[in-house]
Length: 251
Image (tube, rainbow, N blue to C red):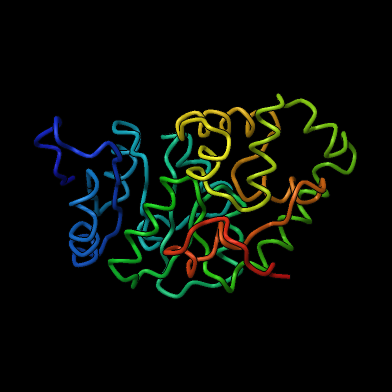
């Protein structure tokens, strides 16, 4: 395992773990991120598991060539080692079926392995802001599939409104803004609270509602009539734009 942890006083607070068997890719990704984050890299599955268990990184950039995830079980195995780590998966040739499976399982992003350095920086930045990174062509598939799963999950249980009533008034305000596609920074500004407080609210909301991430929460908010789902929260093309801006819905 390599990294730039020599000076802990000046090291960035966000720790990014790069996991790929390709040495050139490890070097490229490290070069793109090392000025902004504490970056570590591994090239073997065993080293990955040990690093996750020992370091609990904030973000894991995982090449599927190193860890062939089996959808839900694969992502859950990683989350058991480091529950708070946000996982972004990289494939040589991304496809909708695989991407939807991984995102449903709780991944925070799904990208092409040959990603440009600037875009890689934007991916990590968006994850820090509590956003999910998804290519535009996956959005219609993602909305349709997760909406179906959400309906099945709640078919024989309480209604969406009943579930949302378990939240505090402040938590419901956060849900409303998530449904509008607003990112954490803007939620903090609108509610006059800190981003740290927004993240704490989201952690509590996910636990209370039994959800695994932001996309499922946005769908729940939308189906309960609490606002439109904004592609800006997921679309890679919007990474450089203000999140939560007014944009057409993807249907």
